[in-house]
Image 1 (cartoon, helix red, strand yellow):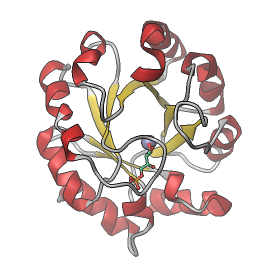
Image 2 (cartoon, protein in one colour; image 1 turned 90 degrees about the horizontal axis):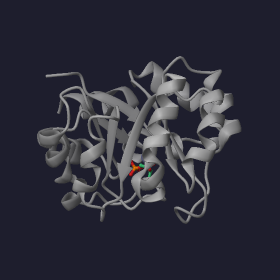
Image 3 (tube, protein in one colour; image 1 turned 30 degrees about the vertical axis):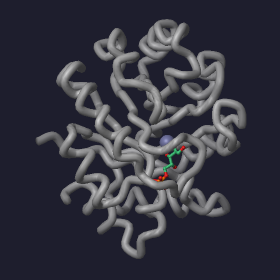
Image 4 (cartoon, protein in one colour; image 1 turned 135 degrees about the vertical axis):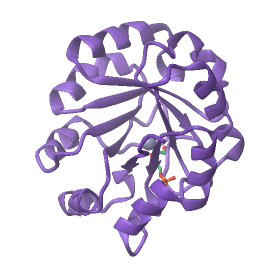
Amino acid sequence: MDKIIISPSILSADFANLQRDIAKIEQAGADWVHVDVMDGHFVPNITIGVPVVRAIRKVTVLPLDVHLMIENPLDYLPQFIDAGADIITVHYEACSELLDDIIDYARARGIKIGVSIKPNTPAIVLKEWLEKVDLVLIMTVEPGFGGQRFIEDAAYKIEYIKNNGPKNLILQVDGGINDETAKICKHLGANSLVAGNYIYKSTNIAEAIEALRTN
Ligand code: DX5
Ligand code: ZN
């Protein structure tokens, strides 16, 4: 089996100590850093923006996995790429008509591009894009906040993506992931797990990351 890509969400880190908290996950074996960008419109919360991405780019060698929970993501792609994003995931619900332009732009700039769906959006809407993107992100909570409860029904969409997408597609899940829910997702075919609270609230981050990977 392929290695599971673990992408800890810094939404659960201490924002006054981001450098320290990113170093913690880097030393503990994380693969990527998951950065949750929220605009107060697409979701009812405001978090991190371009300047923070630029700042954390300087303090880690890990790929920055930037999850854009924002309206009009195409307008902001250039800035996030200039700031150092390696993987950018946009929401289907925010930009379905512009998804082809977004993919073209990401290709031209040489970054990985992902598309995400919220728990109530059916997986079939992504059918025509599965061959074109690098990553599909299935949200297993309503986007907007960390620390919510895993929605198991949403996780079953992983199977559809797995069965209809190319072999090398990165199939990521995000929301309420812990050692138990990770098992369900991996069984369904996920090969990348985002986790905020489970990792940052654990007493041993290396063990938490390892548990997500191997349980
Ligand atoms: C939710 C974010 C998630 C969140 C995950 O809108 O996209 O990345 O930080 O947090 P946990 O793992 O605590 O559910
Ligand atoms: Zn996220």
